[in-house]
Image (tube, rainbow, N blue to C red; front, side):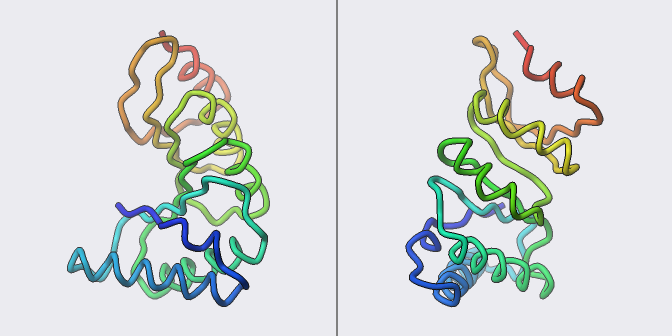
Amino acid sequence: MLRSSLDYARATDHDHAVHLVQAHLLESLSGLGRAVVDFYFLRVRDAVEEYQIAGALEALEVARQDGHIRYLGILADGPALATLGVWQFHDGFDVILVGDASAYQTLAPLALERRVGVIADVHFDGADVYPRIQSVASVADIQALTEMT
């Protein structure tokens, strides 16, 4: 499992974003000594320009088609609304990774709607919910997860 750098957010144009993501992926795979990674998460910390996210996703989709990435995810590494801003217009993700209850509650309904897996490392009312892949089939499943005590 790899997560992207935030370099794509400093890209000056679409092609620059493509190259930054390709470079990070190549460097990461080379460092691991692998040609493929099972999960690659695009980190979203702040709002980004459309050309930045489009370039990043183009590079990742090419890598997926070339067999270097099996599943593409989005990592909510900042405010949930920043992730939502990226995700609502781009639906090529297989999984989302969230680290706090607020982000989970904001993003889980979209995950359900888009049939995207959720990996959560969150705390609900003081209860630890350890990282896991959680599939949901209904809104009731999401509510049950968010009401854990």
